[in-house]
Length: 389
Ligand SMILES: *Cc1c(COP(=O)(O)O)cnc(C)c1O
Image (cartoon, rainbow, N blue to C red):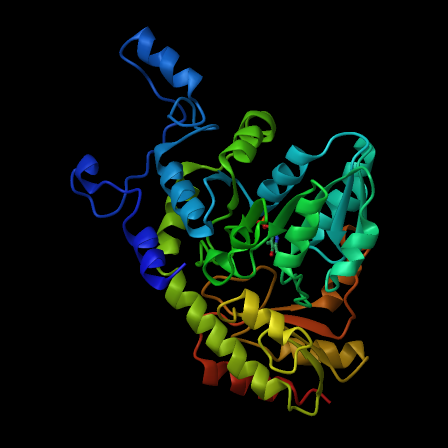
């Protein structure tokens, strides 16, 4: 999709100021339900509750604007907005599988996706094989007669490993298997999985789409057929629909996504160039680093870099890792990413919680997100913190 299309979708499409008293910004319709002058109109609304407002757990006019923009940006027919990214991802996965089915997934998806695949779904007789998704052969080998879904996250969190979306989609189609991707890292601007034939595309809207660190949300995009199935099953029964207020906030965030992600990607590239030559840094992880083993795939599948990267420090000492992390200031210590705030997430912090017991990242790894801070200030801060010895 070219930038002109993206610009029109983000700034104009699916909005109608005349219908909102000329308001430039669409109204927040914070209503749980909708009322009708006649029984005939109410009957009609109920039959079409996935399309017209009847009850906000199903359809809400403010939320609908965001859903239509997201479907258009991803190049799919439909999208649904959820209360969180995890709700969108789990609903997408649950909509495809049933008892006795098998999933092939990348080995290091987002932590709570891993929990769903490894611990939650087996309770219902659904098994998953987690494989190194960098090599298409691994998908081929892991597929079983009862495989219904291939789950991708490209690039993934922390180490930013990628999958060849075109090759995996082709393999899946040849075997009648559905594919789903968590596309949060790239946002709908930098990577378009539907173009390669990926069936379901999930996002944590909490990250880039919201962009201001103040709203949770999730989006699931796909064909009208697949999304209709999600609507009448997981969406309505599990009930993880978001508040219209969150949709309205995220709609606001979406307006500035192109410039925010551009700046985050440029700052991240700049900081990675600095870090990869620093003597206290063992390794950097950044898909758009020309020395990354998947750099060719990055530039083929993604149109530009985004703001996340990781490093490992050249030390095993917890005291030194702590000294480094505690010396950070503008990079605030915390989870999440995609907002204005620059963040550092030391893997060391994962080791204390039972919920992350299967943590696969080394203690000396730190994941960064370059927010909207000035890049020189961030570099100076890293330079200072790297004197941890
Ligand atoms: C944050 C995140 C999620 C979960 O999204 P929430 O909005 O926090 O529920 C899923 N996938 C990735 C890659 C994430 O970073």
